[in-house]
Length: 323
Image 1 (cartoon, one colour):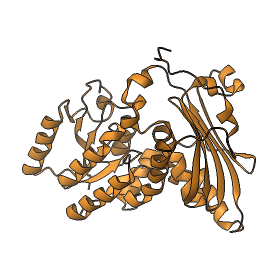
Image 2 (cartoon, one colour):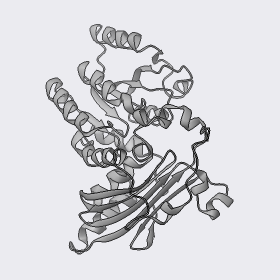
Image 3 (cartoon, helix red, strand yellow):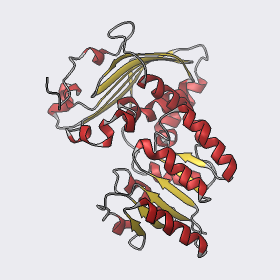
Image 4 (cartoon, one colour):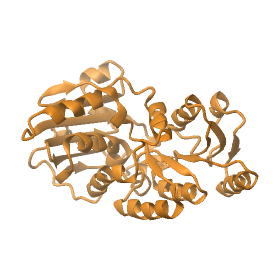
């Protein structure tokens, strides 16, 4: 029997993947909300879905559906990071399960509060942690589990995804809304690493600016040097010359681990698992949220200790700096 979904944040970059997942799992999108009305993508998947640019009207419509016998089973949350907590609460309070993009919340204590609302409502919150179902990542986790348990792996994580000046004007450039670089583009990598190599025992931040962050994490079974950036000037020369604007690298013991492919259908697979009762919940999300929260409020120590090689790149001015 098909389920009824609503979607919050329908105009966002990631929303079409959720629409596609709802469609491909044989379910129905009955209503969507976004303050921006550029949502023609709805016609590709659910042209009959009601759409609202005012949350109050969306809220009222969902209540009307409930009163007239159309139960909303799931609320999919694709809104800006700082609104996740509020929109998850909305979903739970209308009696729906919630599927939320990462980061599920910005602060660890938000997870504690949401668990209380979960208990009160009897409904569940699921986080999209798609790297946990990536075929290559699953194979790596199995390989590490079979290795010598005393072995501590040396890892270099590099992720550079170029962004233009628009980034700083949008909510993503506001640390209070996005959580900063590490939260916005790194949280799923930190989730993957702690899922495979164990909890974080210690970490330090070497660099943290408007366009990059770098640090070191001591996990139970790995020492991780990481570097994240949205500045295309940080891309390796060969990548820039090829015209590419994104670079992803995970080196384990000096060897490149390839996981660039296989991302196309991961949202659909995530939805299938959630609908089958096997999704990743609030507690699964906690380790990575704790890590990025600590990064956000850490004082960078500079180029001390074991730092990622790219941390030494010259720093750049904020594009809107008057200095």
